[in-house]
Amino acid sequence: MTMRLEDIERIKMLKHRYMRMLDSGDSDGLRDCFVAEATIRYEGGSYLYEAAGRDEIVGLLSQMQNNQYVGMHLALMPEITVHDADTAEGRWYMIDWAFNLATNRETQGAAFYQDRYVVRDGEWKILHSGYVRAYEKVEYRDTPIDLHSHLFAKFDPPMEGGSLPK
Image (cartoon, rainbow, N blue to C red; front, side):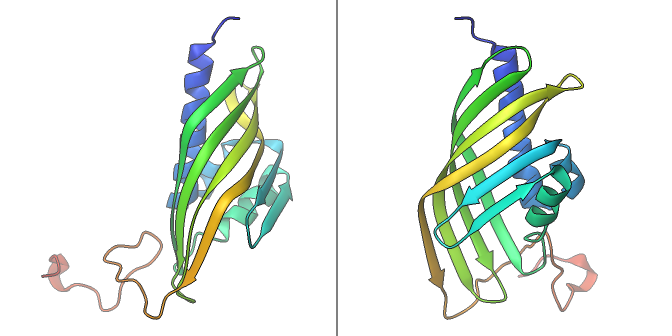
């Protein structure tokens, strides 16, 4: 068996880019990670997200990119099998943390991803992405978290003169 190390590295970069696009709210970048006919199935303890087609997927995932949400997703420990020049599959361990500022709901968890990849126009893209939760912990806080930075929101009142808070 020959290891296709360059393909494996490109698939790792694709998965990491997907996670970064998800957490940074870059819908165009997220769209570029998928082929047009892609599908997803994300199964958590309190939800099941399924979508077919790149536009539906990006529309669904973009809903969490708002000023009431902060989150982090990490894809770790990849097991990637390249079947041939155009198809591959990967398994990943994902750790995530999310906070809904409107409800003070904090979610922490881990999941096992199982993805399929294809080459289109010379680049690896996601054909299917799915995960099942290993665990999901949901907690409602009595008080909001104290955020000093939030990519999707601006704070009121704005800082005077752009100086750092003391």
